[in-house]
Structure formats: structure tokens, C-alpha cells
Length: 115
Image 1 (cartoon, rainbow, N blue to C red):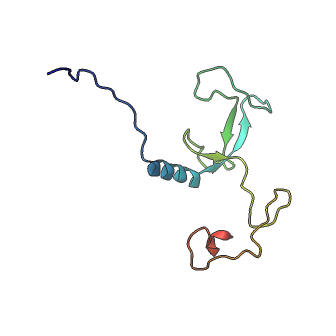
Image 2: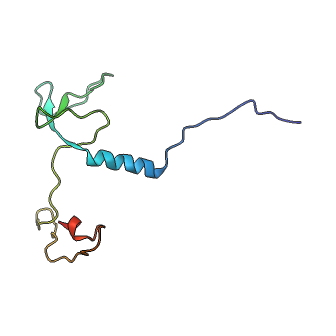
Image 3: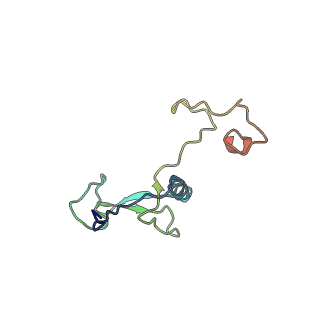
């Protein structure tokens, strides 16, 4: 008999794509609106050379003190998304006026989702 299995190689394996996408979708659906507050009164946040947990000179604030602050893995947004239902020449969107939808569909072509 020649050779032996004295060495074993292990590596990390990513979860299935479906698991990752579901996790990301859950985070997207639970995203929190925040405001940027400055810790030092400087209008422009800048990175500090430190290994602290919050290495930036700003903090994320909730618009309402009753809300809990976002966690490290939470998705956040600063501005609301524009409504694409109305025409907006500045953004170059045509809106959905006059667009046909499928009344029986629960997909992206359905009337409930369109606006």
C-alpha cells in the first residue's frame, strides 16, 4: 500500500445562493431610515486611524428617539427612494400613467405592485 491520508485540507463553504438572497431580502425589507450625526461637530465625516468599533467621526441617528438604533449588520438608508409612479423629468422617469397591468397577476406585472 502506498500513500496515506495524513493531511486533511479544509475550507469554508458558502451557503446556497437562495439562503444568501433570502437573508439579504429580509434585511432590505427591515432597513431603517437614519440621519447622520457628527460626533465632533464637523460637517464632513472622515475616517480615523483607529481600531475602535466606530472608526468614523459620525454616528447614525434614528429620526425618532423611540426607535432603536440600527445594529452592525442592519441595512440603513438616508433618503427615501423616489416614487417611480409619477412622471419626474428631473430623474428622467416616465411614471406608470397609461401603462397596462395584469389584474390577475401577483407578479411584477400585476396592478397591485405597479402603484
